[in-house]
Length: 176
Image 1: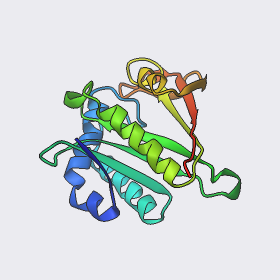
Image 2 (image 1 turned 180 degrees about the vertical axis):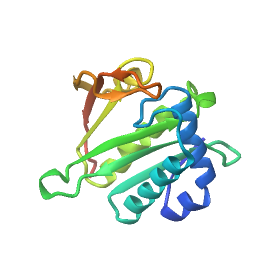
Image 3 (image 1 turned 120 degrees about the vertical axis):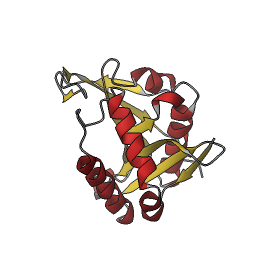
């Protein structure tokens, strides 16, 4: 597996793979801001927005690919640009195709996102995930993220059920 940065050009070139990744996550119950049925226009609009954020320098997207170059997952960092928050970034949309889960792609993506954050001088990462099967709390705990709280009925799982979220953070040591 290789992890590499995604540019707006790569996102456009490989749009079908990224669209399929988002659709697969939602279809398999990931609580990532979408409900079923997921319209093609909603998927396209989402990735178009990500591409604009990438072009604006406010987002980092990393892709995990297998030995053939096929996309197996992706993860994002939203970089805070306000002067009082330039030390932090939010981890967003850690996605791994359901057929690839449990093989280390999520861990590898998170480690690469942490390295990308460090390289940009970020010392604090935060994220939220759905409580229960739609989320990935166990992964974040194994990676040393600290449980900071949660909000009842925060978001709907893909099936429309309201679920609480779990908020995590991790302080990073910046090298150099």
